[in-house]
Image 1 (tube, helix red, strand yellow):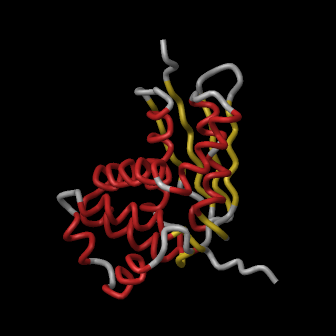
Image 2: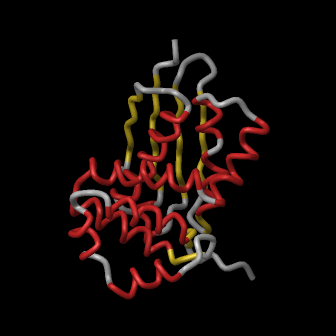
Length: 195
């Protein structure tokens, strides 16, 4: 039987907490976390799996201590760190071997990236418009432990990081969490193409 316990790569949580330490809200955010949780994260190898609750608690602590701007900054910094780490490099090598770096391909890669970084956390679907710079993503089957606004906002920040990496500087991103209690997060993403 397959273990369906929601899990997150330790490297993701480590990157988020490392980024939090560089924020003004870092001490307050870290103080909100159980010391045994911090020890568990710090003693884990980056490719090990941790309970998803550890990630949810980390992003919630940052969000409560510093708001959406601090959380966004942490997720962007963590994303850059993951991108440079062993899992990120492996994903990136495969991605760039197959695709051109542009917004559509970066967004289309999110379901695979989610599967590499998280287990038992539902399914991500990305629908990209053919005739305009717009996409809709729907993360369904989100387990109860991750059904938090802070987790949805962290996920949203991942989109803005990826689009920025693809050279997009103007992004309009909205989210619908009206069905979060059912395990569904929906995001509408529009961007301005490079000239």
